[in-house]
Length: 358
Ligand SMILES: Nc1nc2c(ncn2[C@@H]2O[C@H](COP(=O)(O)OP(=O)(O)O)[C@@H](O)[C@H]2O)c(=O)[nH]1
Ligand SMILES: [Mg+2]
Image (cartoon, rainbow, N blue to C red; front, side, top):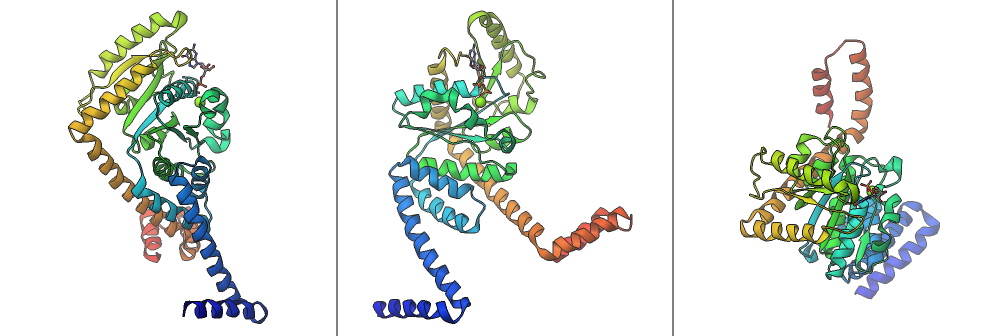
């Protein structure tokens, strides 16, 4: 029976090549989809075995905007999900030049020496212009890039923050399925990206410099409030005294913030990423955070809350793109915009008219 079906499908597609193109196309689609399914399967298998090339290729599919790739990506993420290892996800933020890349190099190398597998991802919506913050910085991670147990991926470029965020979140899951147990997510302090990274990480680390005011470092109050740790970098050489003073100052300032739902009291650390000082203390702190939030249930609760947040986020993104891609909406939108320019309607009436179309 099976053989027979197979044969007839084959002969159908052969005859269609000459007779018409509708069925030829659909036969091609079936062939493509079969081929995709088998390559999906082998990609997923390699990924689950920890193959970094397979991980990279899977992330490329996640980052692609092509419908065919999106479909494959969805299947791979779904297949990977049950195998995602329990990792710790650490968000790292700070203004350009503070030493994020240097810190990731030292910290990542330290963790690998401890037997961890470390993945580094980035959320940088501006990277379409700067061609990826980490990519350009791979020179500062020269030790880490050569490590078998390190995986470094620059931010997907040419996308909105929402797009980058979704892709990064799926990439985290893929890294975990490939067996990476520490995920470092770097972001440059631009606009909303810290909030986004905060919503996908367990521990949020703010890198700072001594001696420069918050305004100079472009740090907003909200970011300090999100931080589980303030790590003052470049505490070396002549900087040491200023760094110690800054530490006291930050400690005092942090006391003014309300307690966190995690019950975790944010810590202030001094490090030198360049000279690899204070690095082990940062890891000890994160380990301490993990065990205390495991104990009080916050760790799991926070991940669930994040998943709920991303559910709504995904729905919102989907509805929005569906709305704006609707041909009727596109045409009517032009019309309503003109009416607004001519003062012949209000924004609210126009919006109501447009929303009725979808
Ligand atoms: N003295 C000193 N310089 C550092 C330290 N960490 C980073 N740097 C230097 O600061 C500059 C910016 O570092 P980078 O890691 O690229 O910062 P990013 O833009 O935040 O990624 C580089 O020249 C680094 O060598 C440190 O701990 N001490
Ligand atoms: Mg950098």
